[in-house]
Image 1 (cartoon, rainbow, N blue to C red):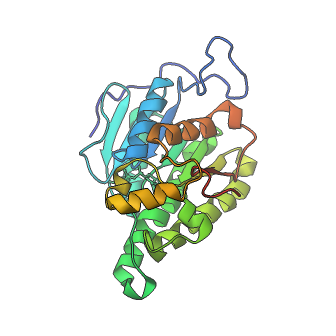
Image 2: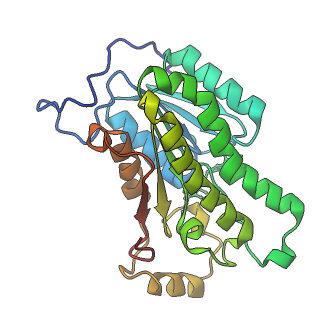
Length: 265
Ligand SMILES: NC(=O)c1ccc[n+]([C@@H]2O[C@H](COP(=O)([O-])OP(=O)(O)OC[C@H]3O[C@@H](n4cnc5c(N)ncnc54)[C@H](O)[C@@H]3O)[C@@H](O)[C@H]2O)c1
């Protein structure tokens, strides 16, 4: 459902020309970003940050509750693991705002438990949410991103880098490793179009995703982090903004760790 969808009135300044008049990290004026998973902790923070940078934002999630609203924000609901829904969302986004410059996919869900306790249905569901969503959103957004030399930010996880654990389960670990290599694959395939693709690999971030942990598990997790504190969703959103900014113009195929030192490579 659209709220305050307006057409573009200004053309974007070149991302490669630093503007001394606007020293912010990201100049979003005239730009449009699709944030998927926008009702979640990191997604909501990203919507706020890109709006503050002047971009218009398509805020998409499976659920409406928690979706940011306001001027310059188009709310759309849909299942990011469903091909027809993703096609509709991208179509409606471009119909409303006329272009798409950046894609940030903050959709995600964790599992848990051992492999021998994982049903095929759970495996498929988690691969769908965490990996199919990235494939579908990238594929559908690509023709629009290419027009504007756009950028994509995907979300892997420390679980996708270090093998994960039973806290999040085998499907999450496999899906997030898949996101990392999809990032690298697309970085190479789309470099000729100057579409950059990078990912962020968070360790624990203070969002609803950690709500399922017990107090003792929180203590143990923080002890495993050299910096000893969970990341704030705004910090992670800031990394997404950086990856879309002119400062990252020569970065593609990268994976940025924000794990309090848990993962170092
Ligand atoms: N929070 C963490 O500790 C952490 C750590 C590592 C990686 N990540 C990753 O960061 C990203 C953002 O996570 P978060 O912490 O904001 O989690 P969150 O649970 O707060 O938000 C996830 C959002 O994804 C949405 N979603 C789930 N399935 C969907 C679907 N099929 N279609 C559309 N939307 C769907 C949910 O409704 C929710 O709003 C995810 O990819 C997550 O895996 C988070």
